[in-house]
Every structure is written in structure tokens, then in C-alpha cells.
Length: 430
Image 1 (tube, helix red, strand yellow):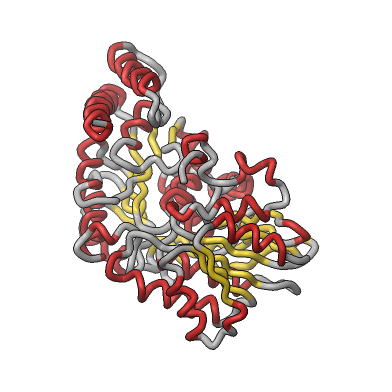
Image 2 (image 1 turned 180 degrees about the vertical axis):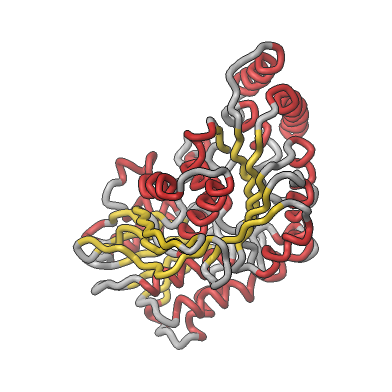
């Protein structure tokens, strides 16, 4: 019955969203990919939001219900019928009266199941489409016949792009770069490799008192070089998000220096390569929002690059929805972490293969610890942390790896502000 009611509510909200789009005619910036969608969407909004009078998808609202909720500026009603009725009424008011509405919407479009992107493009036609990265084994691939089928699903966003618009692609992913052939629209490229229009070079971790506090890089664009300083985030993914945002703003003729200034003040969303102070003088790389093989590999590589006198600890939970790739990808991740980390903590039933991979890298068995539960992993960490330790915490959404972070963060009283999934509806879940 709940599924049926949810289906009816979704149909009503989609119909209202369609009418709102038709009435107010906002311009659409749509972001898709398998890695970094939310971070990229938020970075774009940080750059263009104020200048363009824009609204963004809240958190990671990218599902069939999340998209109409964003268009209608409504909150998730979860299991509260009164909130869903309120949402429907709000949609009716938007349709029947003339109200202030954003000129631009910055939307995150995900594909959990076949048909998701096609369904989204029935609601919105993008004026700007931004495609991040995919990787060989993207997240959600379990529900598709192959990674190629998932990739084809996401290309539907590019095909829906207005010919008068622009496609902005991550040039470091060859398949994403090839999407330029799927549209007649203008295209812009960003990445780390030579030849891209918006290129990052000299990526460095910024330190204060020996503790990592952010990332700096040089932006190369149109024959010029600009320094960029991003606080509170580590690794290459925030750099990619920043490049996509700057490319979007440049297309919209915003000032480069102003955009870089906004990015320096931008706070990345929780659980996306955020660096947090930990107990006993340790530091935490909180990447607990979700996990795919390519994102996990990048996060582990970031841990490897950090300079510290303490231990490098990789806390790695299950990567879900990988289907037939599950064993191979977990072993590969474990082998990568085991090749340099001082300690690998594997969390979840699938993470046994992470432990096996770490063993295959000749890591000592005594330095590989396994837990079924993220909370218990945090309790163990609390007992062994020391000054200067760097702890990466990564895993799929269903593993609730933010509970590990909460156990070892220096300011647990700020968990509701700093961590993902702190809503009451999430907290009561197992």
C-alpha cells in the first residue's frame, strides 16, 4: 500500500512540476555522471546562484521524487502524510497564482534504474548539461545489464540538451569526452590533462600545523593562470567540481576572479572528501556519502598522498549495487589500500574481499581488521587513534559509515551540521 501511495504522490508532483516549468520557464543546468554529481552541482550553485537568481537540488535530490520536489521547492515528506499534502497544495498555489520563481534551476539527475534519465527529461530540458565521470564500474550498475547500458541511460540527458545550449564534459574520461558527438550544442571541456579548456595543474594539499586543511591548484584557462584555494576538502574530486563550476560560469560570462573567490568560501556538502578534526589530534577524511569503485580509488589515492607523522588508516565499507563486479572491485580496492596504509579496517559482509585484497598486497594480517557494523568500527578506532593519524572513512550509503566518523570526530556535538544523514528519519533506520 505504501508503494502504491508513493507512486500516486509521485505522479501528482510530477504533473505539478511539469506545469510549473511550463508556466515560469526557468533555464536549466543539469548535472549527471557516476562520480561527484552532488559536489559539482553545489559548486556550480556557489558560483552562479547569486548572480543568476538560481535554485539548486537540495542535498542529493536526484530521484524520481526528488526532481519534482526541487522544482516545486518542497521538502521530503518521508512518512508524514501531512507533509505530502502540504507539498501538493504548494504546487497548486505555484500553478494557479503568479509567484516569485528562480530564473535558473541547478539540478542533479541520477540514474538508479533504466528509464530514470529519460523520465527526468520529460520534466526538464537542459540549457546547460554537465557530465562528470563514469569509471569502468559505476555505482548503480547492478540494476543495469552492463556499465554500457548505464552509460547509455545517462547519454539521454545529452541528447535532450537544447541545440542552443552547451555541453560541459570531464575530458579526463574518454567516454564522457565522446559525448560531444551526441549533440549539436556547443561544448566545453575541463580536467587535469593537457588540451582541456579549463585545466587544473599543480594540485597540492594545504597544511596548517602539520594538519591537512584543504586543496590548492592552478587554473589554466584562455592563456591565463589563476591560483585557487579550496578549504575543508581534499583530493582531486573537489578540483573537478570546481573546474566544472568555473566552466559553467565562464559560459555565462561571469568574472573568473569573482568565481574563484566564491569557491574559496564554498563549503563542500557533508560526506564528500570533507576534512574534519578527529580525536587525539587526528584528522578525518569524511567521504561517507556513497561509494563507487572510481570514487573509492580516488579517495584512497588521496589518503596515500597526505603527509603525516602518524598512521594512515583506511576505513572502507561495502560498495553496494555492483552486481557481478562486487568481488573483483572490493579486492582491487583492498589491494590498493594495503599497498601503503598502516591499517585497513573493512566494514560489512562484502568488505571481506577488501581484507583479502589487502592480504594480497602483502599487508600484515594483524593490520587488517574486519567489522560487520560501522558503529563498532568507530569504537575500535577511538581506542587506537593517536596524534597525527589520518583516517579515511568511505563506503556506500547503506553502510552508514558516517556513524564511524561520529565516534571519532573531535566535535560530535556538531554532527548534525558536519555529517550526512543526520535527519531523524535516517537516524531511526538500522
